[in-house]
Length: 93
Image (tube, rainbow, N blue to C red; front, side, top):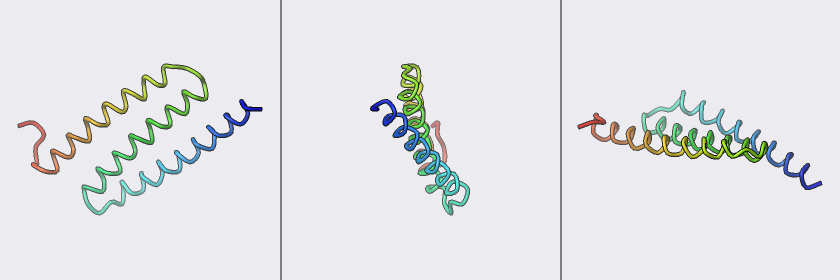
């Protein structure tokens, strides 16, 4: 019984995360300013990381958790680079 509840919970969470990804993609395309687009990209990497984590919970494999950690690190670095570019107009000084 508890395995079935876990499977349904993860499936519902994944469906909601896909809907959130779609909303962010819409905002990324229609964003009026560059700051809105950067914020959407930040949210999208977090959602992608959560989708991979839910896949790891569903399958029980540890490799998904490592992939989610890599996405988190790369997403943070890209957020810093984009913010620096928006502030100064250049990334590397």
